Image (tube, rainbow over all chains, first blue to last red; front, side):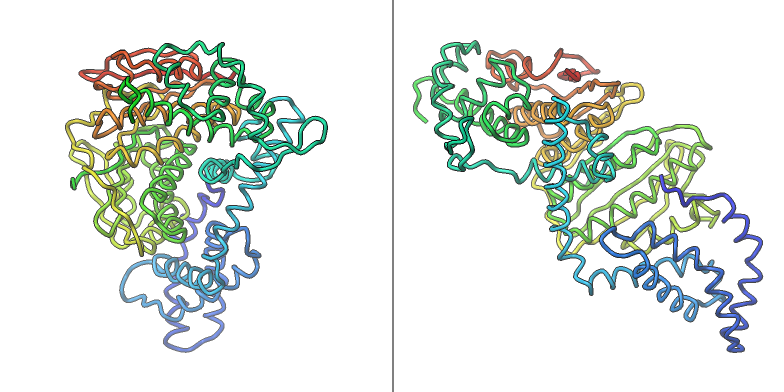
Length: 265
Length: 272
């Protein structure tokens, strides 16, 4: 909930409605610049509130406030009191329009994905750091607190990681003795354990058709019952990657389990 | 292509549920290929409308917040409704709402805005947006009779109906993550919960479900999911047991429930 919602704005805007109309008459009909100044002062809190609510953290507040003030000036000059609706209902879209034009001109649209990506990387790193420090994965709130982000931003970041992170079988990783081994190499070691698979018969036969990597992730998660975090530690990839691999392997397994029993597919 | 909504959400008018709406929109945007600016505008307008319900529809009490999303050939319509004293009426009459900028913001960001009295009581705001690009989901929208969320309702929980099921794949995992975060689950258990949902959704999709019903109940360090309707999919005990194995490893409890004429799978996910 926004903290900008206050009770007194209602009272003051009702009390000041006639004053506001008089100020508009003085500025628009008599050209009295002090009336215009008074109007700017009177409605600056509106521009400020819009800046706070719709500004992006990547832009300095003062810059945005300036853009919003420009929008406010335009609204003050163009507002027609005769039409009978309140000034705010004209000013808000004018100010927002000015801010949106600024975002477009300053290439904000182009920067959005990059900002989101950077945030996703920060969240991923923080997740690993906190897991290492505490021995368990963090909650979303803990991540948000740690990184000073909003819950929604952390959720978006987690989603981005879930969607885009991939693991390459050939990506080198550092083994326990500091020698560089590939992820593919490490799979062979776990292979022998597959006789322990306790999944039911249909699944066991389908499992045999899966690539070793997929069998490994399923094995660790479902047979040894490691958490995704422990699992990640074991095979040297991130928990997000484990999650993604699990999803893919299960999808694959489901297809196989559905295939006709004679194995033609 | 149905004229009905694609997503129907029933929530309680709590401030924290506004975040859930925002995440739902992000999921839809992903499916529909909306650009970031369009998503930002739509999210801002919908947030204002929902905030108004939270703040004013029930005089400080909690009540139903009902939201529908419907995609057209080049537009997305979002209807935010209440069953209270009529926030839309208050908005329309110029009565000060929130800090008085909610309505102008909605007007500024949407193509058209319509305020309506609901036959069942309360009011609603229908906002139509025309993003530069939008991909309409492939398949029929919800039909009114079939998506009776009332049968699914759990106290304090949320219910969600989605059609076609393609949309559910991007929307449901986000909704689950948002609620799992609220339940204080750790990120690896959140991923497990999403994996469970992915598995069940894929099964229901393959079983030919035209729409999906989901009810989620949040507890401290626990999440209860109900997903259905089960109809000849892998989950009805017809002998194809893989999801059963997967579910029993990831979930801390599962059951099949009857809700009216529907059968639903109930899953519990606890923080371990």
